[in-house]
Length: 304
Image (cartoon, rainbow, N blue to C red; front, side):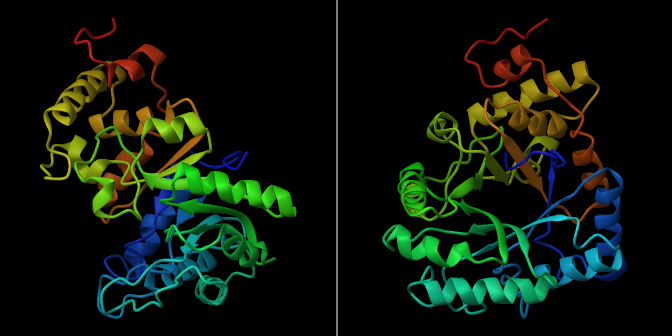
């Protein structure tokens, strides 16, 4: 199983090299490692949202892990195959073309300082490129396991059927948005992004979750992305369970993701060391089944 032997929470490295640099970045990674952490999530596109930030996350993550002597033993996840993102990240229309993916893989290996990437994900899907064209470059020996991010169940099913037919490696995981709070954005506004639905749970492929803490929503932050009556009720229930488990509502929300009936691995990223330590406190937290169910149930009575 893809997550076997891994720490139950992954470190989101999107801020490394930009918002977090130098000694402070090293300190964050050290705190995560000292808690037993070994999963680091980055991407070829990170951090293109800042001037000259493209590739900064991969480079800084590689630098820190090498400095700490754990580059080869860490379970590094990076992603390629992303469409254009503003002026800082120009891309061809066919961003999943074999030559584009091969270039992404080469650049990620060079930035990270790795000869082999433990888990490589396709960041987005264009929905039209034949899956055989996408899968073939991913059989590269520089890649360990392969997976996707923001792909539909239908396309994953098609791709894995093709992989089995040709004797190729198939997709072992899907990374999507997932948290106890349901975002308000409809997928139809951006069909290349996906949020957790019952379809993914029924499909059963192991899931990695970005935005697992809902941007601080369970710590009391307001957000147009999550401010709905349903989410407010879930946050109130998380706060009540936090008292029962001597935890925080954010830790309860992370534990809920880990309670889902398929293998899951929530990711979190922060520039605040206190928030990092809080998230790490959820690693050993296991909710009783009735409590996990109550967080999203229609009834109002809390379990005893």
